[in-house]
Length: 317
Image (cartoon, rainbow, N blue to C red; front, side, top):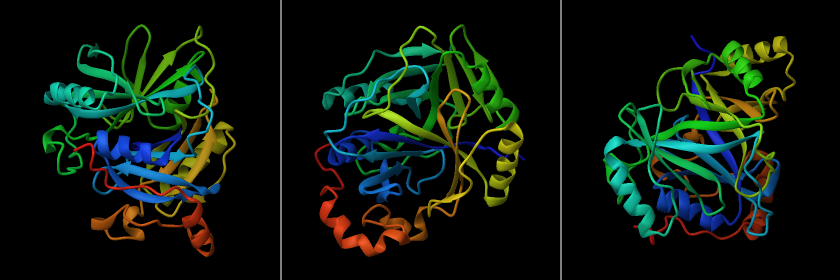
């Protein structure tokens, strides 16, 4: 059994909280499965967007620090694009939908002679793709107005730019259960399986400027491991490989281990459970502010300082 089963989530640094909600739930149609706060800075939200249950591999999470946060810069040494998987029949629908809401996008392109994709950015400039394919059997979240068959199914792959990607590839292949899926002259696709939600694309970009953290950039990428036992086995691998890590952190909905991969990008190993229904029923996920126990005494203060948001967003129907 693989200790790493695929992608778990991607976490991004963003700006305005309402715009964040508008884009990921309104434009893209994901479900807000959890509204909580940043464990390291409780006066900022931590939003989790995903499918109906927040299944690992479908989750995009954000830290909306506010509209005055300085913009970051895409570049080498960063995860620059998070791609979502969509039905191969949905291309015309999504081009029309993005045009309807004045979301700029690049014209469709083809990659690896199979996947058609379009590149776009969210309201903060975060790099995103929609990848139209017939390999993904996952069911997307039906939000009531985006047709069920055209809903985003989850993350397809993440794209990492490095000065040279060999050391990152070595880590993924020797310690994190990835293998080569396919490659081209400028891209190496690794995966735990040849399925959407399992892929990491590595690009060698020595002539690109170094990326800078800030609004519109990715903070970290998390890989899924089945449970606490497999997570501890992954820690043993990291120790043998000589990588420093945080040890196990309780994130309420899963436990996490963080470390910097050789190219400097923050990786996380997150358990697949217990899941987002530990503190609210599945039918009502994301409706109320949920706090880690250590912040419950601050609830009234946090409610007073956190931005007021409207959810669900009606204007994108």
